[in-house]
Image (cartoon, rainbow, N blue to C red; front, side, top):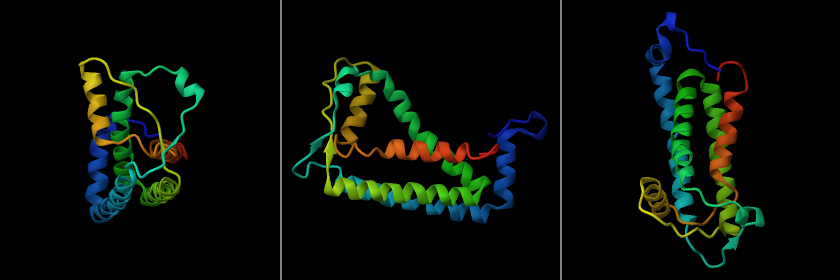
Length: 170
């Protein structure tokens, strides 16, 4: 893991230094993240009721109560993915492209499964009008309850964790 060193100016100063030394390659790497957006468009096209939807809920799912507070880690996930893509784009081009390849190929694989075997889960009825419930409603209004398995969130989280923990410096 990256170790913050006060005597060297800190993490942000080091990042600025890396970017200024290699900004053309950093920009090229970040432009490549457009491939994730393209896969997301494919996902969006498949994220609809297209007839038969296979409910993948289990008894274990039914035994776990809905917790609106878990919307916070769900939202943080987007920052987690964005941060590490940016981090590797700046510090390690090889890891960046390997991670990007893993995410894009994984998303495409998931989309193939979503096309041939659409899955879904029933969502709970939301009660209340607090900020957490409003955030859940916002997510629900922008993401249909389809194509939940395999999980692209889990795919990305596992890939990033693997690359971060691959050696002592992410």
